[in-house]
Image: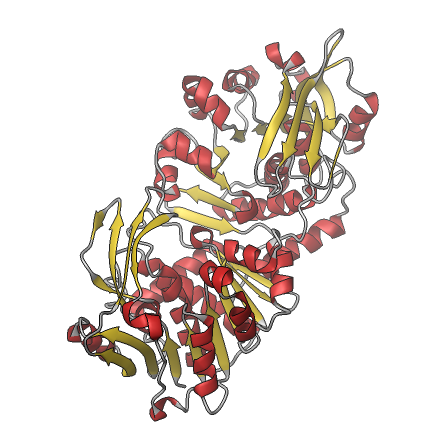
Length: 305
Length: 305
C-alpha cells in the first residue's frame, strides 16, 4: 500500500526548559513520514526545501525507505525555518521566528511514480496547497487524512471548508475543533464538523490523549503519562504519521482499525517527545514500539464483570 | 460492609449559562452518600446542619438507605451556604458567597452505631476535622479515602500532611497534585505524593477523566464526552462516593477493583452534571447505571491483536 505524505520539511530551532538546539531538521512531513515508515514500507514525501538543506537529512529519510522523489530542492533559496520557545509547563510556546522561504510559493509536484497512491496524508499547509495535491492525483486515494491549524481558520476559512469536503479524516486539537464549529462541547463540535466532509474526526488533546468521532461512535485514548516531556515539537505530526502508516499497513478502513491506529499513533508520539526533534523517532525498534503499545493497553484496560 | 462518609451537608445557590437555582441541597457528603448508596446499603453520614435545613432533604437521604444518626442539627444556627457562578466554558467558576455557619466549629460526633465502619470517606473539610474522625474510630477502617483541595494546602499544609499519613487513597485534581508535590509532571507528582502516606492516588481531571497511581502502576480513564454539561457542582464528590461505594460493595481492595471503582465513580459523575444539584443522582436505576458503565467500556476499549 503506498502512502503519500505532504507537508513542510524544515529547520527548527527549539528552546525548552531542558536546553536549546541549533537549526535541526523538522517539519510536519519529516515527522509524519518517519513515524509512518515503521508500519508502511512505501512512504513517499511531497515537499520543498532550499539549497541549505543537508543531504544527510535526506539520506536519513531514504534509509527509512522513504521516497523523496517528490521533495523539491530549490537552488538559491532557503528552507522553511521555525523557532520557538516552550514555557515551563511545556503545553504552551512562543513562536520566535517564522521564515516561510521556499514554502511561500510552494507548488506541490507529484512525480508520475506517486500516482498509484492509496493513502494520502495532507500535513498542515495552506488548504489551497492541500487541495492541489488531491486534484493532481488521477485516482482518488482510498483514504485522505488532513491536518490543519487555527491559523488557516483565521486567514483561509473558505479554502479550508472547500478542502474539507474532499477528505475522509480531519485531525485538529480541541481549541481548533471549538473554533471551527463554534461549539464549546466537543460532542457538539464533532457533530457539526462531521457534516463538513470528513467521516472521521480526531481531536488531539496533547497530554490528555485523543478522541475519535465517527457517526454516533466515540473512542477516547489517553496519552501515556510521562515523567519528562523533553520537547513536544512534532508530536502531533508523529501521531498523524503513525496513525495513517498503521492504516496503510492493515489495509482496511473501519472504526476498529481506526482505534488501533490512534493507539499506535499515540505510542509513536510518546517516543517523539522524549528527545529533541526527530532524534528519538529515527532509531526505534519494532520491539520498542510493541512494548510501548502494551503500556497503552495496560494503562487503559479494565475488566468489569 | 458499612461505609462512613463525612463532609459538608449544605445549601448551594448555583448559576450556570443554563439557568440559576435558589438555595438547593448540596455539600460533599450529600453527593457522595447518594452516589455510594447505589452500591452500598450501609452508608452512614457524619455532618452538621443548622435549623434552616429541610426535613425532606434528610428524608431523601434516608430513603436511599443512608443513616443520618451522625448528622447534627444545630438549633439557632444556619447551614453552610455556598453560592457560585460558572463561566461559559463550565470549567471555571467564581465563588459569590461562602458562609461557613455551622461548619465554622464543626466537631464531628460518631454515634456508637458507627463504630463498626470498614470504609471511610473523608470529604473535603479542614484536615484537622478529617483527622479527628479517624482518631475517634476505635478500629482503623479497612480503607480510608481522603478528598481535599488547594485551600487546605494554602492555609493548613502541616495538618494536611499529618492527616495524609493516616489514609489509603487521596483524591485531588491535577493542579492540586502539582501544588502538593511541587512537580509539574503528574508522574513525578504522583511518585512524591505516594511517599506522603496514601498508597493510591487518584488525580481528577474533569472533562479529561482521571488517573490512578499505585506503586509503579498507572490507570487512565476518560470522562464520558457529553453534549451538555448542565451543572458541574458535586461531580467530584459524586465520583468519590461512587468510587468508595463500589469498593465497599465488592469488599476486596486491589488495583483491578480500584480501576473498576473509578469507572463506576466516573459513570455516576457523568449523571450528576446532567441536571442542577443532586436532581439527577437521586433517581437513578440500576439499569441506567449499567448502561452508562457500558458506554465507558465502549468508549475506551480497543483490541490490538
